[in-house]
Image 1 (cartoon, helix red, strand yellow):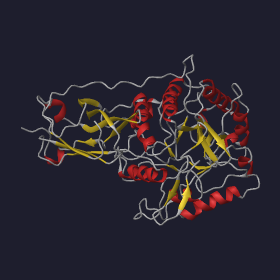
Image 2: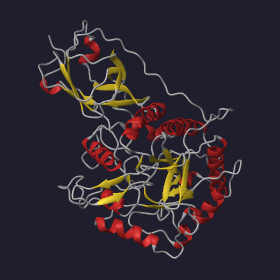
Image 3: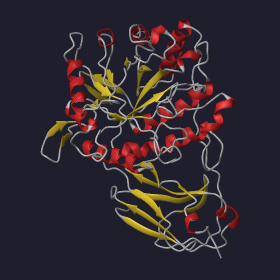
Image 4: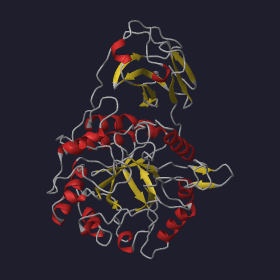
Length: 490
């Protein structure tokens, strides 16, 4: 079934069969290395995927007629928590999912992998994944948890790396590039000493090469300027030593592109630019969008600079005027594109959104789907700039009389999609599965006990476009009928 714009009504009166979701497969320890599908290379200031420049031939024309080249850029997002776990019993309870009241690291990675194709449909070709994650609240003053793929001696923790393999494998299938960060301030202290740090670098890079990944580039650490780094070799003055260490590790004559990042608004020093394969900058905290352009200019004017890509892979609020939204003017994203610098969005739950599960891509637990207006605005602008098809928007409407019907609206997106299935998910279980979307569905024998209690409910649509499976979801609704007096009343 192919759709362009679709508005459907589901009348629920059904026998609901709960089907446990399948777990993602994949292991970091497989002896055989599959043939990889995605290879990233750098030619001068451009990124290439499989020997063609990214967004080949694309020039973005703004609403006021300005034209800016997009070919060769690597549009990305900060999605560092894809392999998150907390190994400390005392702190892991704060990350529980709202629907099951338990934390599940496997579920986190599974849902990340499921959402990846929808990001790709909007033109997202890269994302940052970090082996020590990031602050699970967005910004943190302390790190009492243990979210590190490295053990204290610098060895790799198998569970973390198995989850990383699932994500990188899927990125390879989708033609996406992983900016793999190794260290995060506040977490690096788990490593015993500088020797363990160096061993951790060697182990991680060797793991990437040994698994044959050709879609991975390295970020040594997130913001070497951060004073919270325990090990001096991870600070900006010496981090170039680790960049050189990565460049010296080869497998079958192949090594990895590598650099590091600094805090928002700062320009990397000569010792970093001189040895890097690409330059990372951050825009978070920058109050004037013109400063985004200035940073790129300052990097390119450095004596040690040679033609290489500039990538902003962390910008938390692309606009400073709260009434502006994602309009073209005064937008860090747009300013970055104008200066021929790739841009990456850093989204987390803002003050007042702490309990809004649909918000943010860094706050744990994460809803990895395009589940909020802010996420949707970013991806819509990304699709416009990159000339990508995007995905339909799916929403549930519970405004009709209690328990009688749910309106399901699926609108927008490309016309050439083939529906595989529609699912109604209740408390992370498949409650209803259909292979089409008729206007009305009549069902019998509702499970009153489950539906009458506290519950979360969402719709999930799986479809095929250009041979690629894409999964999109509605926002996850908590007790949607309770304001009207309860659910499924007689």
